[in-house]
Image (cartoon, rainbow, N blue to C red; front, side, top):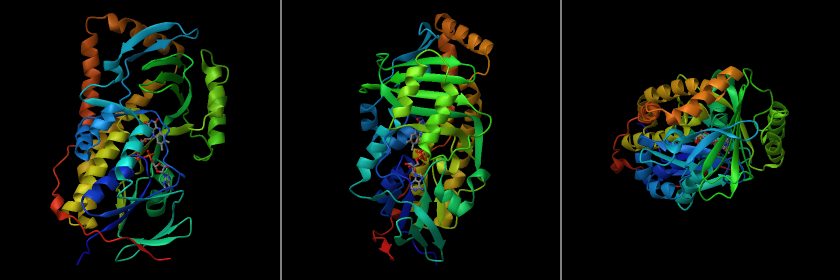
Length: 417
Ligand SMILES: Cc1cc2nc3c(=O)[nH]c(=O)nc-3n(C[C@H](O)[C@H](O)[C@H](O)COP(=O)(O)OP(=O)(O)OC[C@H]3O[C@@H](n4cnc5c(N)ncnc54)[C@H](O)[C@@H]3O)c2cc1C
């Protein structure tokens, strides 16, 4: 007979991992979260929580805190080489805080989820899974530190470059689809004096955005550039990433030279490929993937965080409903999530092409639209059309109520060595 799953190792303490830990603890499982970084990673861009993800946050009890930490953006503008405003776009096009769209800094959200779970959940920072050995009763996990422990289940919530995926499913190249662009984010002083405002500068094949959100004294700097081929550096080599960014933008105008100087110094520098993760299945025996590890939709979708939150809710709910029987729960989790995930991935493919415009004349056309759109009588119609499309994708994964009566027992995980 199937043994009830009780102990769950989660790899990754960003969004998906802590969200899953919260739900699993609530249902009586015993989650342990292992994070490779020595402490919680707080960098990153602002992320959107929309549609059903908002309801998930409400049920997690974190929605008020998320709203209290809203970016509260007012809008944004495009500027030319000399910094002159070409046109402005209001927050309802950019996705500021309205009822069906909450926006928060990724690092803030990670902190909220971590703070909500740290008392009840064991977090192990500065370590990583080195090997997984599954048998009929569970999984023996060897960590890079040398520790060996037993768990009933293992969840890979370790992002686009998931190490758990590599161990349980195979090399990254089999699942990652590069969308032809890179994104970089880092913090720098707010030289432009921005107040909850984003300033965009478009170049052929490149886009730069500087913004400052509510409560931030510094500015965030976002660089996007097209790169049909993948860069060859190791995705964890931050110095190589900085060099790649600086090489790509050296010689460009506006504030870019100054920003590149800050990039070189930034201690929260982030650069990664805009990629999808496409897999035929998200579980293999007792190992299951969650969030970007399973189905990254790239930053272009604006839905990666929402899908990670919804996925955590569904995975934990199905495990509770199935009394810990992972064979039933993993199949139901995947069946429930997959159609909505595919809809969002499809949307992301289109959005990446919109983010970086290849030629000068296409940029000129875009700037013409930016200049004229706010003055046209049909501007609300266009904004509504954009928002309706995004909203449909945000509601693509419906959520159910789970029977929390099916909780597992609260046994502690065993340490085998
Ligand atoms: C520092 C950072 C900045 C980001 N910035 C942005 C951004 O600006 N815009 C955007 O759209 N998305 C960004 N993302 C991605 C975004 O957080 C995700 O798309 C989304 O929230 C889904 O989250 P996730 O928890 O599935 O994966 P991720 O947020 O990618 O988190 C994965 C976590 O796993 C950890 N990890 C990786 N390898 C291992 C390992 N071997 N062992 C243990 N832990 C491991 C990572 O350190 C990270 O904490 C960022 C992610 C990070 C980590």
